[in-house]
Image 1 (cartoon, rainbow, N blue to C red):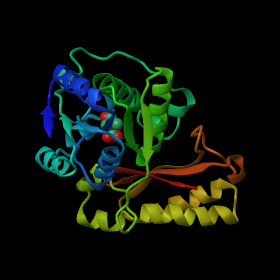
Image 2: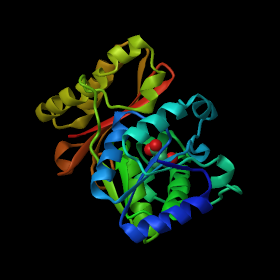
Image 3: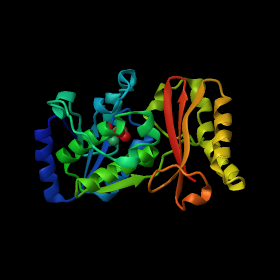
Length: 279
Ligand code: PAF
């Protein structure tokens, strides 16, 4: 695996790789887990060259303490990517990605006015800044993103289409542990006790789909979910929404959309976990 830190070196390697075939790209912020590896595995199957970026992007953290506590496990990440047969690992510094402040403002309209966008002002603008730069550096054939960040995936699809980028954006299913907990780098920050209880988030969403089937006014389901989660000490709901899976707009009645997604964000102590299911 070739570890590259400079954009100019990455561009040379990518140009050579493109002579040989397709380039699959997996952008990450490190603290890798099996969910990331499943993206790398898929990229490996579908492309001639696999590039992973590891960059904790400061512009997408609206909360500076969240940025400083974000887990960093560089040596372990490198070893994992080596075993996953990644060809190129791009690990730039902040100065390399942002030689000057990025003042670009993206407009994702109603896609960003709900859920994560509403709770974390500026977050998706920062994601779009870094992903557009990474796409520009790596010019991949395909780019792979997990559906755990369902809203992020929609925003990246929109950005790619607005910028008319010739990159296939591929959404990959959420990777869960055997108790249903969606894998996340933030799980590393949970205590053993919190980790033990955290699968309740997924289980509650599955049960909520049964509650909604009996009582299609979703307000009732939302209250039920809040009660289930918040009766656990230290667990607090940021939002639970059932949305139209295409527009991400919350719906009031089950029949208001044919393709639905239930999305949740829960604060577990200071750690914020998100998850979603087809509903
Ligand atoms: O999903 C993530 O890990 C990040 O938001 C991404 C896409 C790598 C951009 O920093």
